[in-house]
Amino acid sequence: MSISKRNAEGYSDPTAYEALLRAWAEDKRRAFRPLVFICSPYAGDTETNVQNARRFCRFAVEQNCIPIAPHLLFPQFLDDDKAADRATGLFFSRVLLSKCAELWVFGEEISEGMAAEITRAKYKGIPIRQFDTGCQEVC
Image (cartoon, rainbow, N blue to C red; front, side):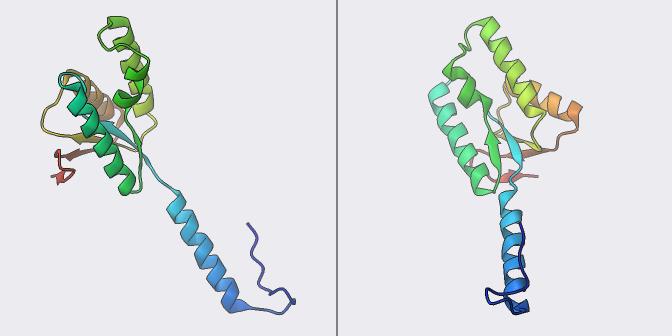
């Protein structure tokens, strides 16, 4: 993007130039949103767990992040009750996790799938943040 130091008539206008530069820089800062991997239970009470995962994703958006929640996406076309589909979904999740800046773990209950995601994040050196189900960070 090019911002001119001169106004439409060709005269130097340093005040407008500085204001436009600051506005452009602010837009660039707001444009960056890191990918965060949402790690929460799916199996069991899937209806409640899906509602919670949606809420956790909304929380991530409110924190200026882009949430990645494979357990909301992959069950749309993969059957978690079929071993081959589950393995495919877990593989896809590992790939997506490797693209994320952080792993956000929600709740105290850690399922087998969540444990695998946490282990993978540790192996890859991806920072892990823990939240309760009310989206309060746990230290």
